[in-house]
Image 1 (cartoon, rainbow over the protein chains, first blue to last red):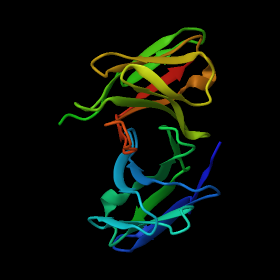
Image 2 (image 1 turned 120 degrees about the vertical axis):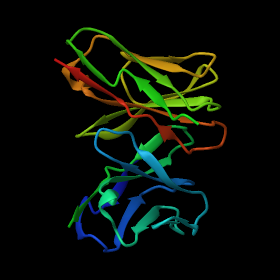
Image 3 (image 1 turned 180 degrees about the vertical axis):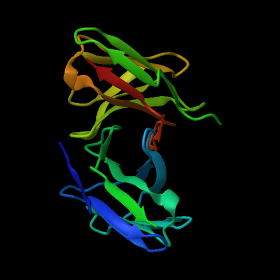
Image 4 (image 1 turned 30 degrees about the horizontal axis):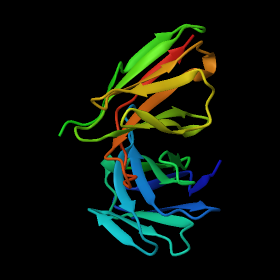
Length: 111
Length: 113
């Protein structure tokens, strides 16, 4: 099946730093979704993107839909301890309503 | 609005048994999808139901099945459990139609011994 490649796999940053992560695919996606998952919980939808080139913010989070439609980016500004978790990109592939997920970027914040 | 709820939260079963997991979607959401999450394979799509009909199915064996009721609540069943079925099973609901925005429940942690 289609794979979404997320990088980096993990990030160790200092509180207050900005964070950037991305998600790439070999196929075109018409929708990109970004989720965050905390330990023992289900993923929480952060941002949804529907148009190539679209830039959408949610508080300190900003995500972009790549113009090639094969990638997406998530930035977190001025990270705080509660930003710790695993960030997933996802999208519907092949017209199905099931989402394909990347393997996630594990964000760890050092005090 | 209340979020997606799943019961039970934790379950321990023995190999060969069967299990049924339950999901109540967000009020007004008609689509329910199920996912399996494991450390090795990540999040994988199982199936999706809309208006009591299975619309899409992932690449899982027939031991995995589901259904949706008229109130949009959904259940998934796994028969003849195998050790490899140990996972976090997540349910997600969406309005349906052209919306791909899915909202997840907390999951059911299934351990097969």
